[in-house]
Length: 285
Image 1 (cartoon, rainbow, N blue to C red):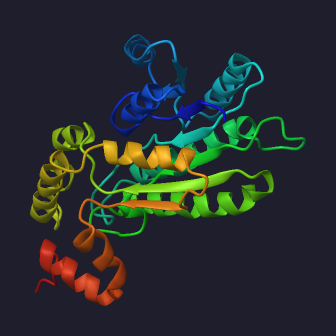
Image 2 (image 1 turned 135 degrees about the vertical axis):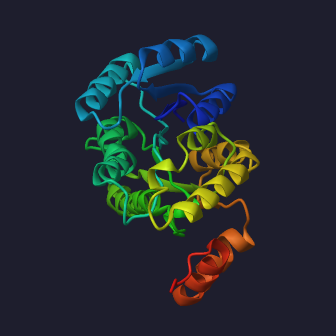
């Protein structure tokens, strides 16, 4: 089996942790970053079996150029896997979310993931005659790919779209034997929560949702800082790469009953009432 894996968004968080984990297990990892400074830092920290790829997933030309450079570097070898991890998380009441920010959310999390997948599919065995053994595409989604909470509409929309795209790709790429797998974590302890805390809720404080949004965002940040460790996601990525029969979707909620099973089982109107009670988003007179 090939021991070469591409991970997007490798500079921090889940991507960085996954790169470190796979390197410790003998893989060669090629991680995408957007800045040369991050490339230099990671190269120095992670060692000779790590190679940075310099591109923003929204720059399709740069993605294709780095895919061509990696093809030359591999010298005839292919990839065992592509982990589409790069992403952003925009929150806010949909009534007031700037459309440019909403478009950017979709551009990074959905269109960017497709651009990367298209560019690296030949190294995963797409195309006849098949030059490389079939590899696997692993798309990092979220609990929000199935369950939608108030104020997380932009992010949830992108993850729902990513999951729909993943199912279509898996069914289309069967002709090559390439599998497509979704990993859907709940909250994970990463630096993203520090960033969310810094950005705060001031953009929406003058709207009808201001106090409620501020309170819920503060609660989400607190829960995120004590959420499940990133090793939970590392383990799922390894299983998705190495198992002879991986799942099509790995659900990794922080709270399995209240944060996953009940929201999926309850009828929509019941879940609406539960969320209204928990968030304070009830009809005002």
